[in-house]
Amino acid sequence: MIEQPTTWSYKTTKVLLISFLFFLIVPIIGISTQTDEFENLTNPEKLHPAHMISLENNESGAITLYSQNIYTVFVKSNENINNNGILLIDQESQNDLKPNSTSIVTSLFNENGDTYDAVSTWIFVENREVELQNSAGGKIWLVNESEMISSIQENDILIGSLLGCLTSICLIPVIIVWFVINRPNPKSLNIKIITNDSSLEEPTHLELLKGQDRIPNTDELYRAIHGNKNMKESLKIEIEEEREKNSIPAPFTDRPDDNGYQSAIKSTKQKAIVSEERKLDLPKTKDYPEEQSSDKWKEWDG
Image (cartoon, rainbow, N blue to C red; front, side):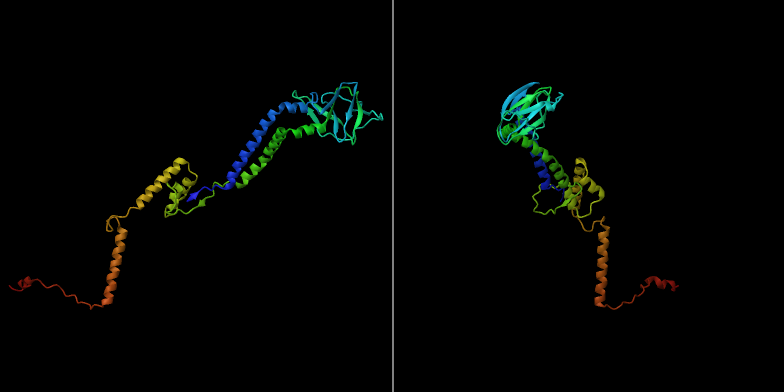
């Protein structure tokens, strides 16, 4: 039987595609349920444990900063802010604490599309009582980035949804490469011998074509492999009719339309007679002329 090969790799491609859709749709649903929590986290103007203090221009406020936490001042992106006007004063020593770290989150945003940029970041090895002074020309927000990260880690639904989205993105190149490398070749054929014990109920056009004791021509091969449904069905009918016609034996061996067969039989008989004569070695006979007619005497009897 000639059949189009289907390999396990093609089925694996479909499994990968289903997995991609699963890891894409489910996380989107999960993130949609956490929209409010996510907005509170990313908008420094809303109440959240990570949002420490907000100051208008020419305002100041005292606050306690804890060790091993990252504190960052954010300002609106569209405002012209003088970063040198943001001062963090140690209340005990009255020294200006210069920024000594880089922010983890470079930008925050709200549901209206406004963005907030990180301008100054501090991290301390011990607790400090400080005063934050704002003379930068615009409103500032002090955010505890360590608390933000902790809030995200404690939200299992949000973490799972983000990981699901990341997984779906990683699956895209894997699916493309896997399908291109392992896709079945439509021009390749897999040959399978059909026996009498075959469990196939109805042979296909390709099986019938293979069952013919002859080499199929190019037209039959094209119709069987690349033809449409109608072409394949018509080919199947033609092959079945030809097989049925060839399977009917001749009713008589000496029928007049079988000239080739009769000639072969006649030639065989003649060879057999000559062979028998040679074996018997019969004497040669003399050919005598036919007896003259009894009316010959009338020619001389007057």
